[in-house]
Length: 501
Ligand code: GLU
Image (cartoon, rainbow, N blue to C red; front, side, top):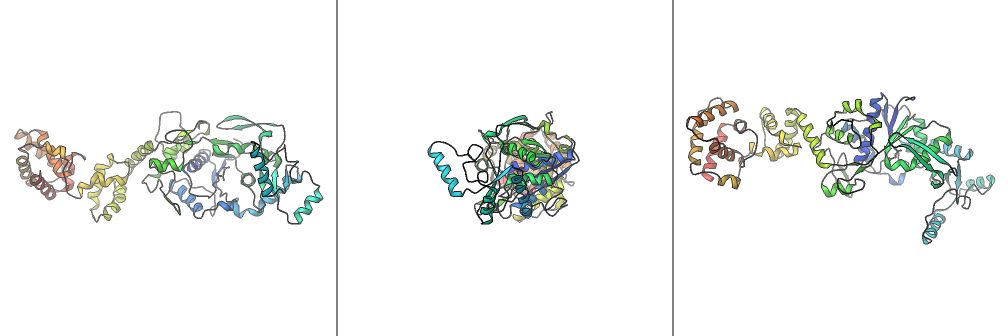
């Protein structure tokens, strides 16, 4: 690697950042970290028609939340600023002109109407209209009129665009870090617009100029940009600039069926395709953050969409990823999105959280139900149920009986109660009443002693006991529940069950 590593994420703020975009940002971030380089973010907002308020802020917030914020961007270490293309507007025209002067580009005066007619005519003949070497000299361009005439028309305020003059009859031999050697025929390319009649550059021109000026060493982006690679590499050649290395990441595929993951898949199957919730006139799109995913889990599952370290390891922290990430290990083939597996990752990271932090996250859910719980008790409750949870939002369903007595009993379990069950439960109440140190271990020892001495089978006591406290045969270790519910409430619930069952 000759140049210092500088990589970028260059989103267009045209809506909420899709999870695929987040993966692109992540891979850039990891690559920069791995090579002690810089990860910067540039806002590509030259297409004013597609501007969406709030989208830019959303991008920053999402990366911040995931812990992969860029080290240079709008308002932050603006070494090569501005980092918003709309604020670099004044810069691009001179580069477009430069290409016209060196013969790599030309003015095109065709009106939108004229082009539309061409398109329609072609369609009627079952052909597609493509603007390139084969017809550019028959169209209204500076290639067929004199320089003086061109100047005059421009001076008269006639609208024009600047198009790239793609070379004819060349085979481009290009290299992509992930895809290897690639071949492109220039005759199949169209003469893309570089500079628009509204005075703004197109994506292609602005992107190349900025990648050059911002000293980008590697362009790591989604596969959908691969068709732009021949034009981009020709632009570097035309300017006489050293091109960055390219790596086009594989598509993220639908969980079932074929094709690219879309918002529709998420809506249909009930999983987010956005990192954060997004509210617009069309409604609310759910986000991983609001769904209760930990940022570590999202980073982890995204890292494995198209990459692995060559072993079976699946759990990686961000730091570990930054050490191990290798573009050479990114696959070409699309990566299937697996929403179920993503929950598994969240389960893992939930277990890693401290019980204090989980209790803090659970407290607002309880507060909404007007339940106030002492902190230490809540910490113990959380620690006893978290193993069964993928999300904090599941805590209530797993732990409701700690806070409210059951109002119904599982029918099947209730049917298993024997004739002597009420009598045994009554005896159990007397045993419990006499326990001074009401801790799980102590209660367990005393209750089991009583059962052994009286030759009472385990199931005969434990099942109805659990049913009385929980309402069903579920939950963690029974005596932990007893301790956490407390003596008085345990006895109340036993009495209620005797009366009801
Ligand atoms: N602005 C482009 C986008 O929205 C950037 C593509 C690239 O990385 O070159 O993804």
